[in-house]
Image 1 (tube, rainbow, N blue to C red):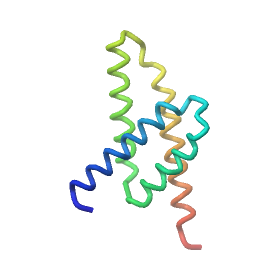
Image 2: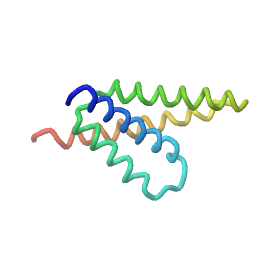
Image 3: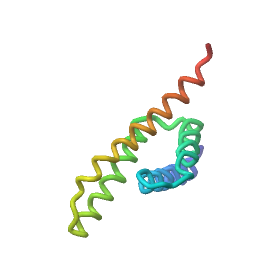
Length: 101
């Protein structure tokens, strides 16, 4: 993938993950489908796990700054570690299933 395409792809991945984070604790009936789509895209593009963690941390930092600007506590953002754990668990399961037996 050329550098411009790679950057555009990473921006799309970040945008998709932002949507997952925002909707994670809601009753969005399409959330699991969005997670599966995200996981498949990350898996097919061979995005390393540390990069996914980096994207998560960047987004949580952005959310934290916004909450502080609004004068609100950012303690609730700690719950979003569950999102990261869920995403990584799905990714691990996809890797496990892809191994030849």
